[in-house]
Image (cartoon, rainbow over all chains, first blue to last red; front, side, top):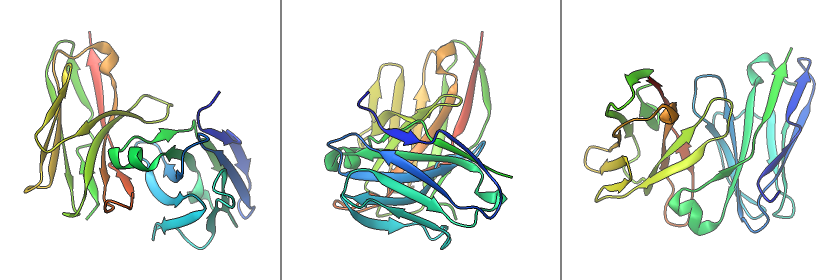
Length: 116
Length: 112
């Protein structure tokens, strides 16, 4: 399967714990995006990378959230000291430069986080 | 004001009907515009891009009005399989940037 892969698919954690999600984009894609989606809402932009550079981070994101893409390939999204409000689906998407301009993002199936 | 705003619906229309969705965006520097479709419990997928002159893809027609910062999607002769959430998407970055923002989505349900 050469699509976008996300792990784990589901994560249940207790409030206050740290969690980390991983995203493996389509191999030749240089842009990688993280979004958060809750029920009845569209994907909410969190951050995006071009290669290993993090180009923008949402102001909605607290300091508890951090994302990395160390070698310009896979990416991780870490949430520290989780809160119940962090419960959501975390979506990763990737694209090539020119396809990002044309808007075609390829999404993974998402990582669902439940904070108890 | 949200960067991309849509009527959440739901729209519930009979098979064969024509239905239209609207979307507004706040950043006048936005470069490109799209409609995505998201099925229940699935990831979003690109439906079509929206060009300044308007564009059509089969039963789907997209329009852009830059002066009013308004985007629309028209679905003709709707099918049961068109039931989904339709997401208005805007690239608010410049030509070298690419911050892609999604609206909250409009739910469409087609009834037999």
